[in-house]
Length: 216
Length: 355
Image (cartoon, rainbow over the protein chains, first blue to last red):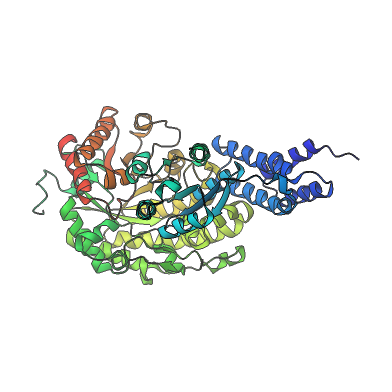
């Protein structure tokens, strides 16, 4: 029987929206066994599902727990599909180094931004939580990243963002990177003060900003 | 009265009490949330401040002498309760303590039963907070309002399980979460009573996840609503007032009031459903006192004194024209390394514009 691939991608997107990790993996396995294009399945299935979940989040239908479970399903599907992506499909992606500043372990916001950026086609290097300012810089140099994305939820740790920029200035490599910041206590005023290239109020805005900065 | 502060008509305690009773006051109360930042006034280190009740007490008293705020808030950090349940913490020298996320107390859903009932009066960190309140009460309990502080049960649990894991467990393993929240609530009830016994005039509870940026209303109510009520009832029975703090965006005022019936809510953003502060003041100003809403980071790190005064004037004017209950404050903790003169400027703004 001929498989209707559009229908299958739609089902795949639905399983992500439904937070159904097991079924997401099943359909991804089916994509492979039916010799469908893995890259297409990621774009039209998994990413489309995360896009829908993001919209539901914006509309206050979904909240953080739901979004996290959707992303778990998406990542489980990615694990199945990634090894089957053909070399020609692998475009050179803009690299992003992302993390939560030292002293802060609140990483939900950072994870949401990471997921949305990944969905939007960026190549993410996730440094996790409690990341020392120097580590952001060292990793960005090592990975030849275009963007450094820094998050914090606390007023007590936000100065760590400034330290990242100070290190970049000190090493005369500030021009090599775009620095984006965000998190509860952060504002455009603070971004301007420390000389960050941009601030975004939420994950959806972060994607728009990252796209703009990546082109700059 | 310090050398720096000027004599007001009412004491801070009188001013705060009358404000909360919606009676006439000499000027609007001002309570910039200077907690950890006080360590710098005494010239100590943050980790010492966090671990020594005597140092913290002296620091808070010295900071109040300098700034003149109308209340002490006992927010040491959000890991106080979790530490006593067994969560390992990291204490940076010059910043807030936080859980060691590589060593969480609850590593999987089978480990929620590691949360056992403890006596806060016999623990390390919660007892320290109780002792700080005793010290403040002895020194200034008749002059300055003392607001105790308790992190909500779901927040305490998130410090032990990790935020992401807890949030997914709410959907996948609700019973395990609820069982742990129930035990934590029992402990927090005792902690609240101990704070009141030590001299807190009000105890401020932080149900951080009652915000539209985190959980739905129904999820929050299921996992924290009834537990918040138990703590709130205990505070009132012990003879103190209930206040709420939540610096999240879009706090569910209706639901939070339903479960805790507080006299005041401290916020950084307008309530859920209010597009701006004007709408917030119109909707909630007669139902509950709003404590807010200076941006702590901007106030502490960016603004000049004149800008702080102007910003506070705008806030005072907005609530005044809407006849809405208001205490001038930062929406969240004043940055520990922020300019303390900006906190003092907030109090000055209350004197100049809050008559």
